[in-house]
Length: 305
Image (cartoon, rainbow, N blue to C red; front, side, top):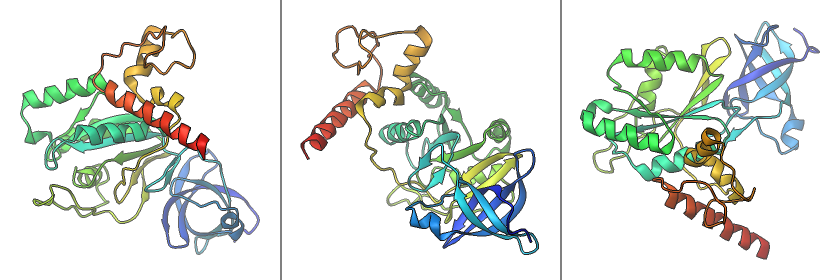
């Protein structure tokens, strides 16, 4: 037992008032030494909370019984609100092309939520065996116009996951973000063979899936690489400052990066300002304008309160 040594760890699972924490080794990697921990009360008194994915400092380590106490919370890079997951590096927005049917509005909103986390954002389309080649090509080109190059998967073909798995192993902490029934659990079962999460079919009545995952948990894919298993997502509206919204649309920020564009005014919102150089002829521009107007109206309301 070592009561005094401070060691960094990674929270991989949370339940009730307890946490599973992977310890960091001398090289800075998290190993398979998983400890059952409680948090020091002073952390909770500061109105802090500990989420899966948080890096923490632990003490009072009992190596025999594999227990310890979390004494400090290391500042996060980001935090996904619902479900609570911290320090994500990559978000894979995941939707099925059929069963349930693809909803472009939902996909767009979830992509914006993901971009807001300031992480690498990718798009996965599942159940592509249910559509023909023409429909598949149409979807690929449509999402390319949005600034994303979707990975199209047939969940029944294991060979289709080799490239995805190799990519995920190069990421620090990835998450599959999408509604129930789109194949996230099936996908995770193929990526992590020992997971064996139960899957549920889509309701024929409401055309929506049912949650089968019950807890948020990190699973190791390789040394210092994790993927998050979650019970599902509640797509909620986020309040965004208007000057931040352009950075949530690849159709806009890619123009700056690719062509080195510069508008006349640094605070240009790319609506009707003079000297704006952005090409506004893209599919989601109406949605972009609506978000800008909503942010402005919210700001006016806050000023009036």
